[in-house]
Length: 305
Image (cartoon, rainbow, N blue to C red; front, side):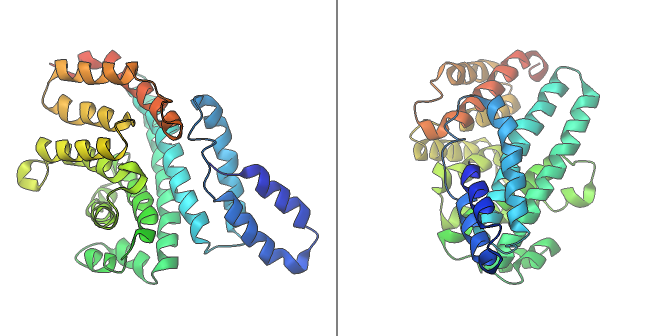
């Protein structure tokens, strides 16, 4: 995910060059927030679980010196969102399904805090791009869509996506906080704006969000299984049918709602049998999707009448 070794080397070698410190932090921030497939292509989730917090804290340390660094803010928003979902929320879900309710509650509370942390970094990044946007998004209401009109190109999409994903996940893990739940239209509007600007972002990630979201809404509300299916098909097409996550979202959302156990079982067994590393940049996400698929199959008796 992040080139931590490089940034540590830069920090050490420039520590005594106080006159160049600002420039050094700029270089370090760019290095640590740059693209890398080292994490995404790893097939060992536990190794990644142990490594990611160090990288995130390293980036937070650099951010103190470069507080408006857009790439760094984007990486922190995405990093905390992914870590919170993959390694905290999913553990809480598994604990819940196995009757460990106190562990599940504690895990969801921690996940909510991580998602809110990610949201704040995302809002700071959006503010760096568009002055005044963060406050208007926080305020909610009719001004949200007007504020989002300032986002006009694909360069806005990463921050829109990660901020909205973090916000929506915080809501999902904070359902007793009604003030937070009432904010759901804001991240949905952000996702809709991101979809309009770049539907292919991250090989269909925005469509995958709407697979899950539309499964929770009726056709009268603009959702429903047919809308969810259209987003599933597009997500699969954009990922060359190699991402497994969209299929898990479809099974867990639409097929459970339909009480289609045969279809649920068929889809998830296909996920489990797939080669997670056929496209290396999807390996970690696919291994995690297979882990969830296995847990859902084991939990099927509780999901179907």
